[in-house]
Every structure is written in structure tokens, then in C-alpha cells.
Length: 330
Image 1: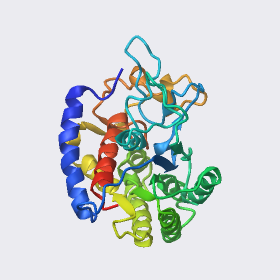
Image 2: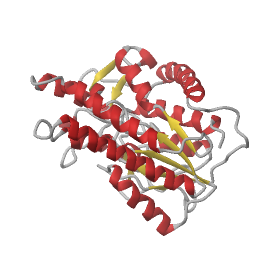
Image 3: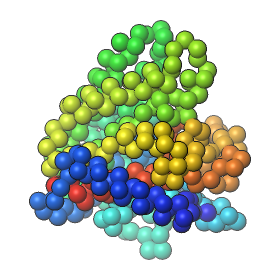
Image 4: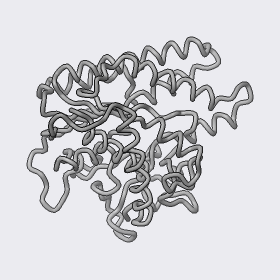
């Protein structure tokens, strides 16, 4: 079963194009000085950019909503419900080895996914090192980076034993480290698409933390930590518009969370995946399909679980990334 349906895709497409255009103007985008065409896409970061080839058949699963061939054939269809990094790769006619099961599979795909489950800012450097050990980064490469959500969650987990001031200092350090590593990538000549992290305070995780704790507004704390991470990262990158294309995912997610119906999303407070229906041990969003949705769940849900984007949200992010890649003066 593909996800979302045609009607939702049309709604999302129109709104996302408008948002993407605004972001292009806001972030220094303009007429490219020359037409950049990527020969490879290299994905760094956390599980939001990860495809896991669980069955070693080039038909991997995602920490999102996984499409199936049909309602009766529950075989995973990894090419549908693409992650944002897949949308970027498709723009250049590229595929990743973990999802290369088309009618005519690509022989020896050159793009790579170095993103990893649970990755934090400190893991970005080793991911870059691993890629460079295989082959150097260079002018023909388009690199995607999204990392930091797990840093915010890890710091938040220490509250209230650790003061908010210390937590903020720690997430700012993590944001600066991400910025330094992104600059390191840009210095190789590769072009970078860098996504800000979304506000963890508006995720279902943040909503649930607010309801479960009476000491302070925990969602507001998560919001402050997310903001300070992004601010530090953005202050560190050398963003002259020609090396790094910044995707303001935080602004898009916050708008969707505060204006129900924006982008066609009708539910932004809970995940569409019911992990109690997962057959994985432990239960995992990798096992999320339309067959394991919560009662009444559908393609208009913004979140897959309490902290990961749904298939339609990943598609929206992909459109923002494509707009940045096409409009940034790389």
C-alpha cells in the first residue's frame, strides 16, 4: 500500500512548493551561478536518514511508515514513501544500495548512507571518516546531514538532576560540533544540504512529557533545548550559500504543529504506528506499515511514532530539500 494517497499528495505538493519557495528566499537561495548535478548522494546523520536492509535483499525498511506492495501483498516496497534522502537522490537519478530493487536495479550504486540509529553530533565526525576511508568526498558529491534530535533527548533525560543551564550548554556544544563537521565536509568541495532539527517539544514525545510531569512544562524545555541546538549549529556553519544549503525543517514542523490542517495534516500529536502490533523484538518503527496503524490512523498523521516523521512528512522534507538543491547557488 502506498502512502500517502493521491489526494493528500496533491495537497502536500502545492503547499510544500510554496513553503519551499519562501525558504529559498529566506536562506539566501537564488539563481544558481551554474547548474550543479550530483554524481553521488552521501547521507550522514541519525535514523531519520537511515534505510536498514533487514533482509539483505536491497529492499530496506525505514524508521517511518513503510509502504507495502498492496493491501494483500505485504512485501515492503522501499521505493515508495521515500525518505528525504531518497527524494534528493531520485532528483539525480541515483539510488542507495539499501533500496535498489527496481525493475532494473542499478549496478553497484555509488551513493552511500552513513547515518545510524541513535546517532548524535559526536558521531558525525566518525561517519565522515568512514566515508572518506572508502572514497574521498569531492566536488561531485551532494551530502545530506540531519542530526541532533538524539542529542536533545539525551540531555533532556538528565533533567532535573542536571540544571537547565548545563543542558543548554551541552546542546549548544553539540550544535557547534555539527556545524564544525559540516564545514569540514564543505571544505572538501562537496555540496551540503543541512536540515535543522525539528522542535522536540511539539513531537508526541514532547506532548506526552508535558502531560506526565507536573514540575515544569517539559515540552517547553524540549523546545528551548532544540532552539539552542539549532542556533549554535547555524552560528557555526560557514553559510555563504554556495557550499551549504540550509533546510529550515524546524519552521515547517512548528507551523504544521500549531495550525491543524496545514499541509493536509490532521493529527500532529500522536504517532500513526501502533508498536504493540510490531512483530519485531524489540518492537520497532521499522515494522510500521498501514497494517500496523493505530485505530483510525491514515496518511494525514504527521508523525510515525513519538519522535520520527511519517511517510508524508518525510515526503514534505524531501520536497524542501529538492527546492534547496535546485535553488541554492552551488
